[in-house]
Image: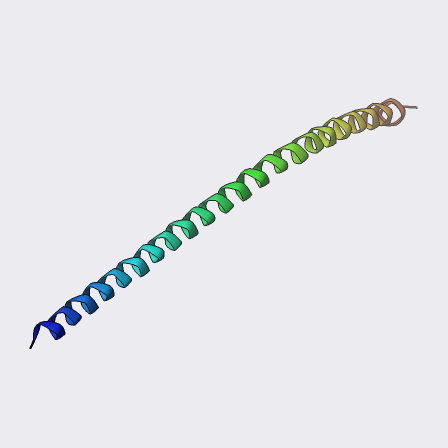
Length: 91
């Protein structure tokens, strides 16, 4: 093998190694970016969901509980006032 072929083979090997390194670097970068994008998206989605669920659910639950308690108490008072005396008293 003469020097010309040896140099060309060495150059071809170096070029191939460099290309493989570049491809691997891009693959690692793409994987890292994909992992970051997934982690960011999941984190944002979970944070958004939890935040808005808390913001919208808790006040409505509290309002429903208060409304139910007031209404139930009122109806129990009205029912007790009007019906229980008639049931419990002998005539």
